[in-house]
Length: 257
Ligand SMILES: [Zn+2]
Image 1: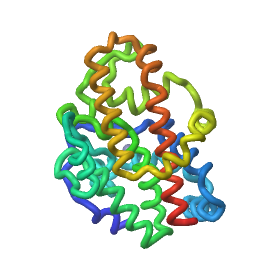
Image 2 (image 1 turned 30 degrees about the horizontal axis):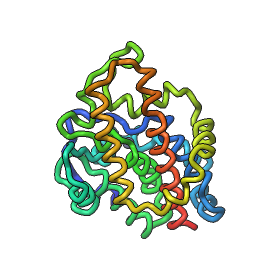
Image 3 (image 1 turned 90 degrees about the horizontal axis):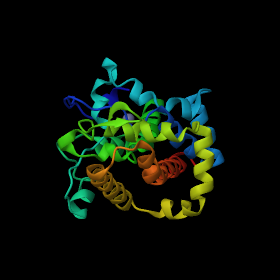
Image 4 (image 1 turned 120 degrees about the vertical axis):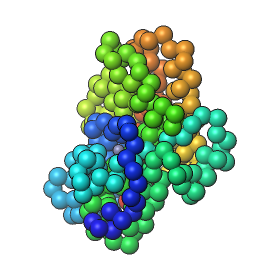
């Protein structure tokens, strides 16, 4: 635990919310679990106990305000503004930005820690969660609006913001349980599974970055109809969820398989 705490000690931002909401993280964890090989599944089950990977997928959000883990607050996002070149976006994976979050540094550090100490349950719980955050568009949202938190909007006649819409609003509007969603996404994207496994982290980040810019551009001309918004973006969001699950499984199979 102490080694995790030593990963970074940076100040908390004024506003930043959760990542995928609970349902989103559970979808990612379920998809990952469904794609673990037998050996990895056995190891993960043993480390995480009978509650299992889906239950623990939201733990990192739940303990953000715990004094022990207070410094983990900015591990969940890496804000980046519009107009960046592809090379400057990709550079963030290794040349960690000094502002806007610590998602890439945190996941790299935790993966290294878990490779050295595979039975470290807290490191595993963080990775299960943060690998989901890496595919959450507003967790690479604009620094200037705190990842969409300052973009106020109405969602089905309720006041919300763009960050929340992408964490929870679209998923809730679709209305599946996490198991239903995991099954649905497997049917929908199983033919893309191999391609997702082959993608580099650079390609995955660029995909997410450009998708995020598309979200911001759409926002400027959106007519405010939430049904239209869900219809327009549900598939793009679902690909992100599925890719997160597949890449989490790939990582855990490498470590435990
Ligand atoms: Zn998070």
